Amino acid sequence: MVLPPLWYALFVIVSFLGIATWYLKNFTNKVNLMRFSALLGSACMASLAIWTWQMEI
Image 1 (cartoon, rainbow, N blue to C red):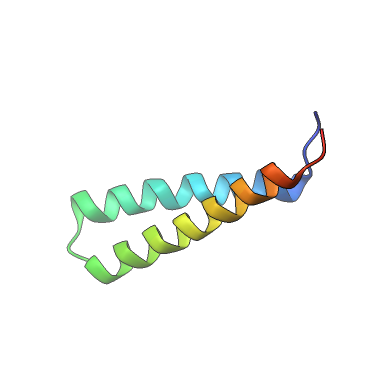
Image 2: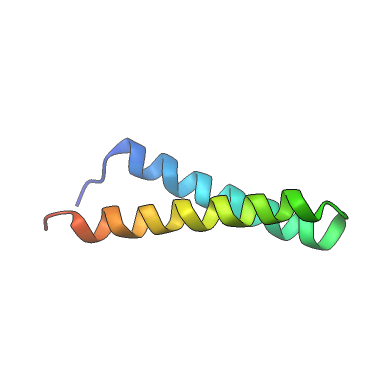
């Protein structure tokens, strides 16, 4: 199955935000930025999951 390029871009964004959240949690004291990246990553992951479930096989 070939997925749209925007799906892959969203997947990369989710991956980047996951790494950013981990880095901010373990190596900085920027709690608000960590929370923001975690919430944004969760929202992107939810939209990615919904998009994937709605695709026709």
